[in-house]
Image (cartoon, rainbow, N blue to C red; front, top):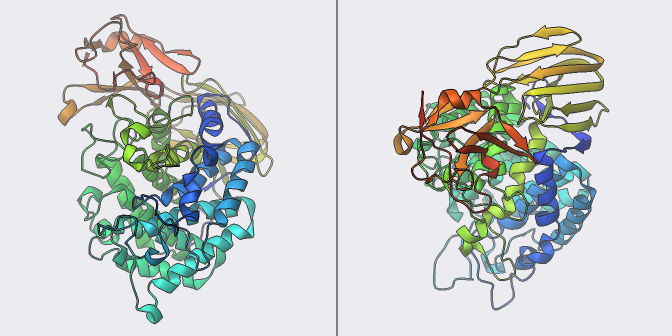
Length: 582
């Protein structure tokens, strides 16, 4: 089958050196030291649940516990690609080597007993008939190992994935074993996710059997309980109106994106784009987070649970659509989600992250909000705590990208990068607190493109004595002769998002990519539930103040607005929906 040409697709520019001295780099470093390194020792159940799966008495399980190891190695990969921290690399190589020893002879790498492997049932709850997310757990392990294989070229990682794939090929869609479908495992929004891993396997190996398996899963997308995503997208049905709008299904959509790369069939690309833009239109909250109560509901103006895993899945989809289409407005969204939903879900210490990061309320550790995930030996592990590092680390996927002819800079926080090709990129200016950015590019000759955010109504670029006023929401293109110094002045004017439904009559306030709000510590003694209206003229005349990464706007009325990342991080209540007057 003809693969699509990636000549004009955008791709990640990989770095051989990366230094991020700003708030993102500090958080990534704290996550590395205070969460990722040492997790095996602090939560030994993450691997021991595999090693002891056939020993009696069985561990008390949940259907999805097998995902934790896969999400952990995936998040650690992305943080590593962002920071290139060698201590993290060494630690993860040890973890991965031990993970490989947990694989059974038949390829199984899950936590359920032998008689229950990939059957949809498990023995750990003998009095209940309950489905498992066993295929989902294997998908996350496959995906994480494939990332590390591409990073290290260690054949044992690919061999482990292919051994898992061999088990799936034996058990499912196989005429010799009865053509059993992944739909038989129930929970199709999760258990059809291996379509993504198999499509990647085909890209890496060119083995037709992997593409054939992915195409069999595609047929099941319209089966009972599944989301019928392709048909709905072709009919322009909004994602929240499809039969299965839960967040887990976005990993299936990632598989459809990979099938587009594999085959070049246009309907795959149209499906992925339709779903991305549908969710963008109906279900993205003011923080950049996706989902309400773990699915699309058709409105962002409600304060139901906004799960970290959901936001990460949508961000992963956004990265794919950015690469497939090169639309800079998608990078604008990724920036919004990065600085607010993703960073806001973390304690700045990197020691804990949230399951639910509301627009109004409190930030709780995920261990407190979804305690029922915690088990003996893995007291801090849950779906979001293992996944949350990926939300920060995925910046490595879109900060600097390229096409066949152009180097694209999408990220403006202070950074020193050296690409694998030897180009040097230095960015200074204390963005996003300030909008005047200095960029130096060295050892690169060719086309350069700067992302001009759609929110920057008046942008000025100065390069080699020439001043330009590029259009918002585009890439500004120029030539780099081998060394180029330029200044980029972005418009950080105050912007407002009018609330609807639950937030009718209120506004959210932005400067650049940052969402502002206030919490009890910043409210100047005012009752957070009865704040005075903010005078827009006074607000727009008040400059932002940056101190140790925190961005504040002190207003004459006594209220101080603060950036979402730091709102409520001490445990105080906060709000991002405020009253304002002209």
